[in-house]
Amino acid sequence: MLNFLSLLVIYIEIYAILALSLNLIAGYTGLLSLCHAAFFAIGAYTTAIGMTMGGWNFWFSLFVSGILASMLGLVVGLPTLRLKGDYLAIATLGFGEVVKNIIINWDSLTRGPNGINGVPTPEMFGLKFGYDTPFAYVLLYALFVAGTYFVIRWVVHSRFGRALEAIREDEIAVGAMGINAVKYKVVAFMMGAFFAGIAGSLWAVYNQSVAPQTFDFMLSVLVLCMVVLGGLGNSLGAILGALVIVILSELPRLTGLTSLIPAQFNQMFFGLLLILVMIFRPQGVLGRKRISYETEVARILERRSS
Image (cartoon, rainbow, N blue to C red):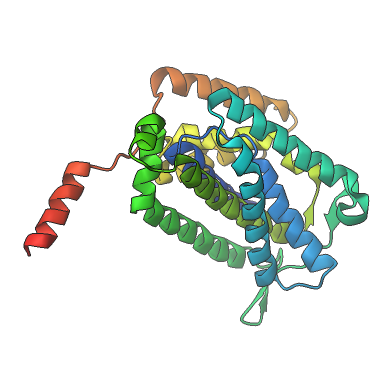
């Protein structure tokens, strides 16, 4: 039971990083992206290939996974982020399917539908991680969640973050002020992809295997559900959404009712949950956290006067 609970916490931590990264794109910048599973897959496969075939260590694989996902975020972001709303969602959905099909069909590199097994576990200060050291994973991944949270918090409270929120609220007005909205959106997209790649790398080394079935379209929808449930534009809300959705998805195993509750029930339940949230709490459980510009101005004036 203790091992199962630690697995649950580790999955919550990985999904929290994914939800935080998507929240930067969808919640703070207002971009409806449906290809987050693709960045997650790129991170996972980069680590799996690098560690099994290239002999890379974990930390180098982690770094390369984030950078590669970020670069592909640039590749997909430049042509698509001039689109808006439904058109952007369809374009990113197409990119996600392209990545998944490349993974399935590039047998010589990704081993096709069978995936890659035997991914080495990380090592740190002489401690080799494994299934017999679940708490080491819990602590290590908690540090990654905290790091992701504080980096994104710093970004959204910076001048760059305020520009992202302005783009979300009124892109035409932002353009009239001389701000290059496309540049800001592409950078936000790359940052979100970077953290999704990091989450994919953490997924690969914990499970010690990767398979293309994990990274389908429903994963992108699931992460979007976490962000919407917690509250778009609220980092704590994204973590809360990951917590609720992962616990609900594992509820049959927690209660020992896997024989009575089929796996398809989860998707039905998530759909019903989203409908209820949209009806009774459309801003999400925690709601969007807005920056008080009056407070910011008062703080600046106070600094200057002192």
